[in-house]
Amino acid sequence: MTGSAVRRTPGDRLPDFPWDSLAEHRARAEAHPDGLVDLSVGTPVDPVPPRIQQALNSVADQGGYPTTHGTAALREAVVGGLARRHDVTGLDPQDVLPVVGSKELVAWLPTLLGLGAGDLVAIPELSYPTYEVGARLAGAEVVRLRDGEEPPAETALVWLNSPSNPTGRVLDVTALRASVAAARAVGAVIASDECYLALGWEAEPRSVLHREVGSDHTGVLAVHSLSKSANLAGYRAGFVTGDPALIRGLLATRKHAGMMVPRPVQAAVTAAMAEDDHVGEQRRRYAARRELLAPALRDAGFAIEHSEAGLYLWATRGEDVWRSVAWFAERGVLVAPGSFYGPSGGAHVRVALTGTDERIASAVHRLRDSA
Ligand SMILES: Cc1ncc(COP(=O)(O)O)c(C=O)c1O
Image 1 (cartoon, helix red, strand yellow):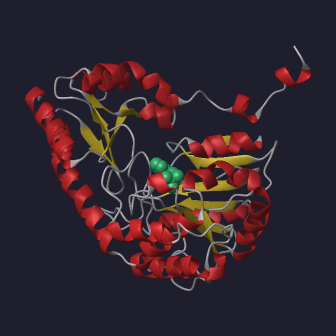
Image 2 (image 1 turned 90 degrees about the vertical axis):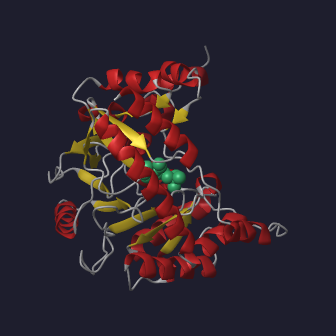
């Protein structure tokens, strides 16, 4: 073999793609006479609002390069939208940076911040797998923190995620403040993944940039996605904002690396952040699905924990997770095993609210039949 054939790549540091291990259960669920109800991933099933589609199309004739920083209109629309929707005020449009879906930023933030061997990235005990992926791509190590646990001294980056994927747990203002203070105490950057901020059900989620958490944004970043609030998962649309110095640094590197959002998507983000009707409409759809699914799960013997916000129901029957996954698959319903999100998720399943109304009704019917 040549030298290049045996060279290690960053990919060697990554775990196996967990979804592959669901293949057998997927096949089982697909064989159900009424078809598969896939509640295993948080992918939107509802259409992109027409106004956003038009915005995407409106610049389709423009062949020049887009800017990495995004148009001024996009950055102003983001600042306006965060103020109206989440009461986040005082942001400078200069400090907004569009990203190619928030997963891209999550996966590359440690690298873009210059983290590497010897650095620690702190992530919630149960969390979105890409936080760990991002740390490993940079060559850093991961530490999983229990609720309220303080990051170790070598921590260079702390990820917060409220509402949480997978648990739906919300960090209140006191918990957010404490997390920011603990990260600052060890000199770590705080990145708050606020992908599900618009989906509060029994709690009102707060942004880390809300003034009640603190008006000093030094070392703090908020990461947002339009995938769930505006059904733009397919467009790959998100943004990061917060500490001006950190945003400047990210922008400088991203310019060199070609990490820019296509112009049509920038136009779509601008339209999506400029008004809120579609966010309310989507919220109502998910709320209605949650109202149907939650009692059906309970009647089938599952306890629902946390889940006060976000796109998922975090459910357990106190049994091994693969037993629960198999039980759902026999009924044609595919759910995600909690173990995908951390070793302590081994008795829970994550049930997404992302089925069409027809599919959710079918799932509820099947669960009730077997209750
Ligand atoms: C917690 C969390 N962060 C980030 C993302 C990535 O979203 P996107 O890349 O579509 O913006 C997801 C997707 O499900 C998520 O659950």
